[in-house]
Amino acid sequence: MMEPHMEDAGLRRRLMTLEFWRDLLLLLTLAVTGLVYGAGFLVPLTFAALVVVLLNAVADRVSAIPLAGQFVPLWLANVIGILLVLFGFAVIALILSSQADGVAETIPRYAERLEAILASLVSLVGEENALEVRQVLQEVDMSGWALGALGSAGGFLSGFLLVMLYIPFMMVETGPMGRKLRIAAPNRRAAAEISKITRSISRGLQRYIGVKTFVSLLTGLFSYAVMKPMGLDFAETWAVLAFALNFIPSIGSVLGVVLPAIVALVQFDTITPFLVIVLGCGTVQFSIGNILEPAIFGRSLNLSPFLVILALTFWTAVWGVAGALLSVPIMVGFLIVFAHIPCMQWLAILMSGDGDLSGIMEIDEEERAVRA
Image 1: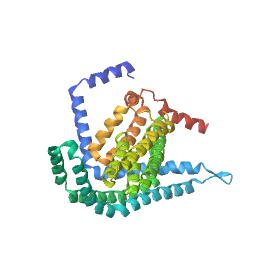
Image 2: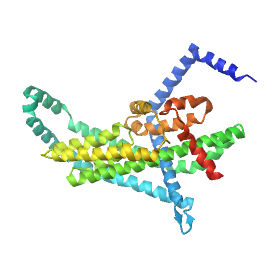
Image 3: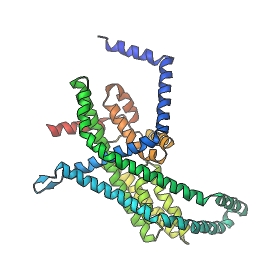
Image 4: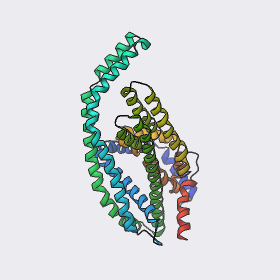
């Protein structure tokens, strides 16, 4: 049997060869190419996997509720979880579809309002600068933008239907897949390790998706409570966007405030609604993102902020807005996998915020305590 130091020396020699880096570069190129050209298949599949994770998280919470001295049966918890998630999707689809025509009708009025605002700013920016801005606005093809938005909505609908098709089959496959992985393992030790890793990934993703969905829901509701009393057009749509954008780290919170604030600036004749929405929605985003969410997550997701932004940039470039929404869940999955594979733990340490992986590993400790 080869000594460990001899294996390490052999590994270092392979890392120093040109062939190794050539093969690694080729593999990465093929992987990125596959991600780009396979987006139509991979994005709905990834979203479906995350929805299944959310369903399992909701079912676990429901099954922990005592009912007449007993806990809710697992089958009933799964049914309640599915109904709750489907109800949420139905509400979002109803809001977006009901206000789509209103958005199209309002665009010309907003364009006229922009012209009026620009005219009032001539004295501040100068006639020449105002003329340049007006020319830029005139070059904006509103009809093309509207058609593009409708095309995106159609693509979203087809992707949504595909996600709904995947979900029941993935839920049915969840139980047998765990058993098949254990059977396919070469030995009992490998089967136990695979089972531990899959449980850790499932629990980590359930915690992230569950908590993120909860705080995003609060963000949308409180933002709506700020926008609706001001009479902002399409407050429901902006609340849905605030909910969705909250899944995008850093940039999403900013967009959740900037977009409705711009609409308020164009819609109203005074600047007061604009300031109220900026301050109100900004306070909501800051309080939930910097106080509530860290308090709930604790140290369970100790991610490097730089790698979060790097992952956001990469997945946005590969899969667009869908990639931005999926960037952190994908990173969490890789971090948990690397943390439980001894030869990859160094990579998990680099991906973490401060090198401490205890927040990830403690998931298994909790599970052992429960089983004991």
